[in-house]
Amino acid sequence: MPKTLDQGFRDFVTKLTPTSSETAAAKSHRASIKSVLDTHFKMTNFFRTGSFGNGTSISGYSDVDYFAVFPSPQLNVNSATSLVNVRERLAARFPNTGVRVSCPTVLVPFGTSKSEWTEVAPCDHVSTNDNGFKVYEIANGSGGWLKSSPASHNSYVKRIDDKHNGKVKELIRFIKAWKYYNDVPISSFYLELQTARYCDSESTIVHRFDIKGVFNVLLSNELASMQDPMKVSGLISACGSDVQKDSALSKLRTAYTRASKALTAEEAGKTKEAFDWYNLLYNDKFPNYYL
Image (cartoon, rainbow, N blue to C red; front, side, top):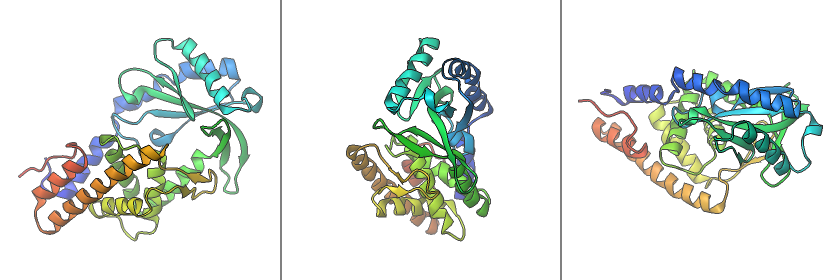
């Protein structure tokens, strides 16, 4: 058990990192899904995206995301129809898994752990941007199509993470852990890009200071939609509805208060009290202080 906050955060990031068995489970269903999509949609590429693909996933909470690239004629003008078509094919192959549409993907919830849940985003390749990254179109939630470039966004986060010697992806994990442990209805993608953008303007990253810093930025802008820093996807929303946004802001205010009190306690030499505040912040999942 940790005696200092630095050790506590080191132990916490280890706890948040998916285990080798989770990583293996994440890969285990790839071939069977790929076979269905190859057969029925003439798929040209199938690659992993999202947090499992870029080192910001959370053990026990993050599922596996894939882009399934189809020839454009295989997709419907109405993206909702394309999602239904993919769902029907996957449901026929996996009838007992509860396959369902979860825009912009089709969710195949294998097993009992979210590390086995697989989300498939049907898409087509539409262009290559000025930085050499491929741009795709995925369902936008209202029947249309939205440009997306996973490699472009990964490069953005990686550049900032490299600048700070790997501390940015750790900070992203800490912010996502708060989201998952407290059922906060904020997009993980939004949190990842907001955290990276915050870190890009910082000279150094110290987790106990910058957790509070990220919460402060999110609260100050009231979870406003952000412009895609890579200029691919346009405006990126924090929440799916006004009701979700109200709930998220309420939880964000509580999080900022707890992160602030933890920092104040640490600065006053009250290490155990700081641990107690972080345990409140993370719903009793932060490492316990050891005297």
